[in-house]
Image (cartoon, rainbow, N blue to C red; front, top):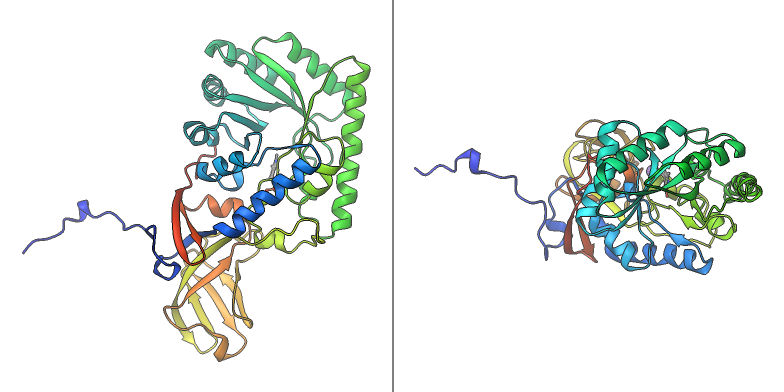
Length: 379
Ligand code: PLP
Ligand code: MN
């Protein structure tokens, strides 16, 4: 008898181009291309309407195919949050990457310097010793990079605390070889998920006033500060219009996760859900309970449980490593064994990081399968 030796058995692909959605194995991450492309165009149009650059944050998706589409529509380049995260994007041909974060330690600085030989790289700095270490690593590799001084505009995370410190740091940068001072990063993460649109507007205006204080200090010192980068999906509307940002870093906007969908948006930015988890009902132990195979290894849950797309009267009540527990209001609302269910993930960034690939569908036909190549690259 011929045996199929297990060492030659690869896990079958979850989907193939041309499959229908119902054929896709689960759990899988699904991208609705029509909604995704609408979202890409909407944010690009918002940026262009206000004459600011769009530099989408790729930490949201970690997928070079997605970044290349954002750039093809007019994005200036991308942001990455980590140096290693930038690797697959450079390999895929992205040539302008801002590391929107502080980078500390020789292995990271050496890698950054090597990337800077192949692509235009910029990075955040908020301390003179970090600037010196960066300059030394770049000089060693014979490369140069742009530098944005990160300023704290209210998030109370990283960043310089006072305008005079930013000016002093810019003077240090000017004295160091292989660095080019480009301007400021002013990102306010605490603002992005405030539910009320008025609260986000007032928060964005307050952050913009902080940025202006810094810009005045630079002007008084006779130093130019051409770039102001920042902003996320929740504040993009106000940052783009506010006259201080030259570049918007929104990341989540192509996907509209359940966390962002809880916000009030008004009618200015009507982003659509494009990102879904496909799961299978694997057990129906009671008339009102269904168990789906989408656990914490397929979706993040720190910003809320995923939300079933269809089915009124059906709620996610708990999640375990490999199980999602759904409760139906009535037995008639409970999906049956084997049913494939679409869910909207709570938070796009950590959810992408759990998947090797994303199944891109047009209607219910699989059009492409894209590698999430930067998945797990968090150094
Ligand atoms: N810029 C920075 C520095 C961030 O940390 C983030 C997200 O956390 C973003 C931009 C993008 O924000 P969002 O995904 O909410 O659009
Ligand atoms: Mn996020």
